[in-house]
Amino acid sequence: MKRTKIKDLLKTTPTGQTVKVQGWVRTFRNSQFIAINDGSTILNLQAVAELNSLEEATIKRITTGACLSVVGELIPSPAKGQAVEVKVKELEILGDSDAEKFPLQPKKHSLEFLREIAHLRARTNTISAVMRVRHAMAFAVHKFYNDKGFYYIHTPVITGSDAEGAGDMFRVTTLDINNPPRDEQGKIDHKQDFFGRETNLTVSGQLEGETYALALGEIYTFGPTFRAENSNTSRHLAEFWMIEPEMAFYDINDNMQLAQDFLQYLAKYALENCKEDLEFLDKRAADEEAAKPQDQRNELGLIDRLKFVVENDFQRLSYTEAIDILKNSNPNKKKKFQYLVEEWGVDLQSEHERYLVEKHFKKPVILYNYPKNIKAFYMRQNEDGKTVAAMDVLFPGIGEIIGGSQREERYDNLVQRVKELGLPEKELWWYLDLRKFGSAPHSGFGLGFERLIQFVTGMTNIRDVIPFPRFPGNAEF
Ligand code: 4AD
Ligand code: MG
Image 1 (cartoon, rainbow, N blue to C red):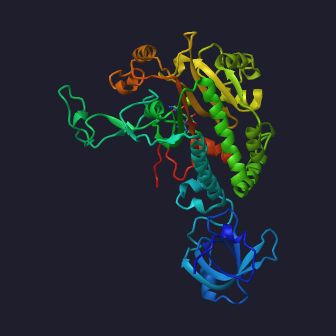
Image 2: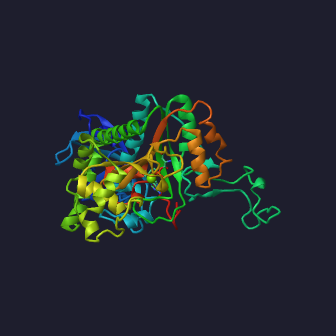
Image 3: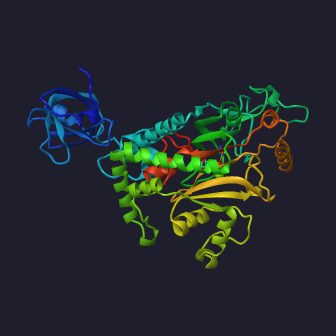
């Protein structure tokens, strides 16, 4: 007999049919009532055994975490909060779970503890809900771009380029680290390395993405990216997923509009397709909020924050305007910011971004036209000689969720910037070629997928929205 997923059973009208359910025991009460979860939904299915129908030996084995297969009649449930339940006819234990040793008990565990058992934490309501939402968001990303006629391009994971010029890269090598071959100057000889050159894990698919945008028009990448920055924060991972659309013939304004449309689409998709999981996460977030001091609480709950994003235009504002607001802000005047905003040209810290979004505008903000000295080499230089056509989308509770720009399409301007910054012009030959052969205005951005999932699920730590987080000092599992 084929199993039916609990998600489908809960929507089925009972007509005396026999069904098969397979899943993991969440709770077992009274030697009779088994709450089973199979991961298809946050909701459990109750299997009910007739009193004294189960053998003592079997009862002992129905423990939290054990895996069961149950065949029985689907009947209307007399209990509150569920439409149907299953009256047990046959019960088989597929996998025992020693109650003494199973680390997940039917009680609340801290997220910190769950991270230490990341191989089992998907069996909790919170992590399973987050991962179902994560799936839905990944699917929605593809749907959004496919419906718009963008092409999904797989950019390489191993690259020789450093797209962000940040230098925080993981090396990829097959050389013997204990005894690497050396050249005449005594330097490690990468000519003898696997690729005959130095390579690293990609920090961004953008540069390769640009080559395809200037051929196919509108493309996007969606893949893992790697940064060896030593950031132990609740918003940084060493391995994270990024969505990077890149569009020929888009200027910075078109780029900002696409970023807004994209984020609104995703929030709306979640509201429409992840209802039960979001309701659970909304309640969970509310409990967490209640434990915070009044002045640090969110004004809106999770679902209301999603609705707010869908329904309101994002505030667009230049870096220069933002600096004026920040300079004159209360926390700046009262020296409450850790980094005081004194002059034009400083990089914004997350306390500044959050002030703009959460206190000043009380809505998502798109900042544009940043000083060129704090942004990457490829961004388009503005007429003023000081700024570039960069844009960052800032979200409540998250800070920067998207970073992007119009790209410098003028060969001379780009080469001059490469030289000024002392970047390896030779290695960028193919990127510069794009500006030699049929260059075009073009733009793009990167959305940090885990930061999006944080926003949509209300999880405060990025380590809880990816199955196996990678961060400094941790690569377990
Ligand atoms: O602002 P970033 O560094 O921009 C780029 O990489 C560009 N090449 C994107 C482009 O224009 N195609 O990163 C983009 C986004 C950030 O806004 C943030 O959401 C996320 O990626 N991000 C991280 N997420 C998790 N952990 C990290 N260490 C992250 N670094 C960036
Ligand atoms: Mg950025």
